[in-house]
Image (cartoon, rainbow, N blue to C red; front, side, top):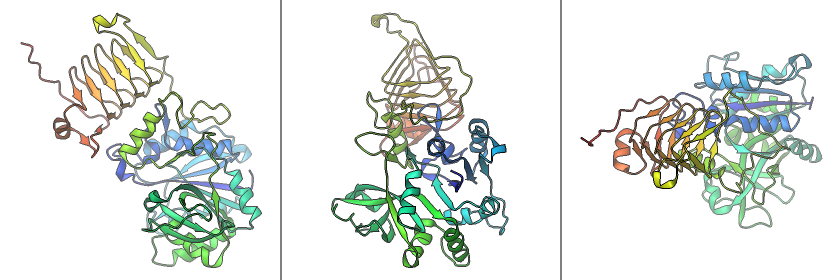
Length: 412
């Protein structure tokens, strides 16, 4: 669409996903084997017909910038189409981005020559499918200054989100961050509207509101400052999330914690997963590495105990399951699982080697890690906590490139 300019906010620290964000921004964290988290937002853009997209990056942005350049250079700049990463340039002041609204304010120069009538603001760290053009139709139909993406959730869960109160026409009357007593949706007392971090503005209104906010000592945040301020003197409407995933239950995930990240990955290996990666009408795009096909070798009988097999799992290109067993797990490209190794309920990232006789359960292993033979993870919480990051639920996370020593061999 020629009249919409899109900005994707991808500069957050992602501290709750540490150590996965120790070396990369949250939107660059691998997900689902072959993807990065940001691929889902960018795929929504392309599938919605949006062709001018600026990704606003900041912290630890090298891998994210590289991924956008190598995997998303798919449009024709000569036709005015592009997906490009934009680092902070301090064009307005010497400050780095002080909030979501300030990030957009510091990049308003991108609109100077664009002349788009609307600006779409997206978060780059959520997993969902959505046709953004439906938001535009809703904005025009209601003559709104801004439309806020909203998903209906059980009201008992709403205290964890930014909550939108609306009247019966879906005009926004309040916007509260993590309220103790969330308001319900009209005629739906068991549900509340949670903000999805998606905003479609009329460009003129956005410019005026950001300029006013920049002069004040606020948090410079859309949810905390811009939207609440606009409710008093502008037409602000909520847009009820229409899921392009086409499942019985709407799917939108903010995978902001390690446990949520692990659960969302393992959702994908189900026979009928909640999130459908195989819908050819709504393709999820990414950078495709030049890896050979996955391979499973050594088909000895079960009595011999040596069988290269993966069950109920996602296995990407370049993987070799060599006499080991993988079950209910996600394997990124170029993973090796060697003789008699057993991997269960785990997310294994690129270039990981799992040595002979290893036992791995409920773990996330980041890139470029080699597990020596007989390593055990997920079976002794105290031992795991002495070496690795362990969540409250007992999930074990091994950092990218971590060097591990061989297990002590007492076989004599």
